[in-house]
Image (cartoon, rainbow, N blue to C red; front, side):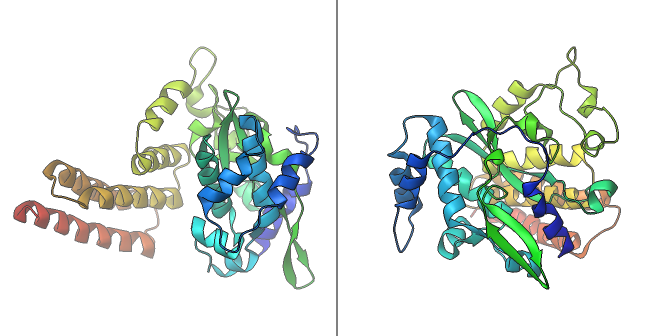
Length: 331
């Protein structure tokens, strides 16, 4: 309980470069006017962008709608009962940070914007900030407007979670410092797990994020820059499963913890599962088997083998057997 409270209470503290001086009343009113008992995402987005003339306004009005309509799922987070799913957040009107990030990404893409959900580390006031992060604990967005990539956090931007006696309560309160800000301006509090999403030629490392030194990722410098443009272009060429594999691979290399290794194992399995399905294609099935084998091999890198990781290996072994069965029977 302490962990979530101390992370989200940061919403009202710290120096930030505000991207907006004030909300756009015209866009706010347009977002407020949308009424529907059952929300269909495409219809909602089409309605919202009717009031927009620019990419910036599209990005802005989606942020406003989410801030007005989605509340933080405190109970679900605390007892682990939440399920990250776009349709679920629209139905229940509550979600955790991943829900906010995935919903914003999906709405932005329907509006014709280039948008991504970013996982990473958000600083709180608890001891974890000093000890270092063992696992990703937050999610937010990168969206491209006017030819420039901007940072956006609709979860932190929609309200504040604070303790009230024996309870933890969510207070709706729109925060403008988390909308359309340059990514580098948020590195005091938000560190992408995949260094690509710092969108910098000299991305910082975890030690610098924790204030332990003026270091950069892979010792990048002005004379030896991180190849952001090249890596981003390659990333865009992949499907969602391939993107997850390369992103979590970079995330583990950037901060090699068991929790991040477990995420990479799961990414390999999701990609492998996709390759094993559908009509018979020997090449795809062989690739799917190799992905599951890679997932199982990663267990050996773990310092402390978790029950979940061992279960993932069991799943991988079953999937490998299934793949070989498909190859032998050609079905």
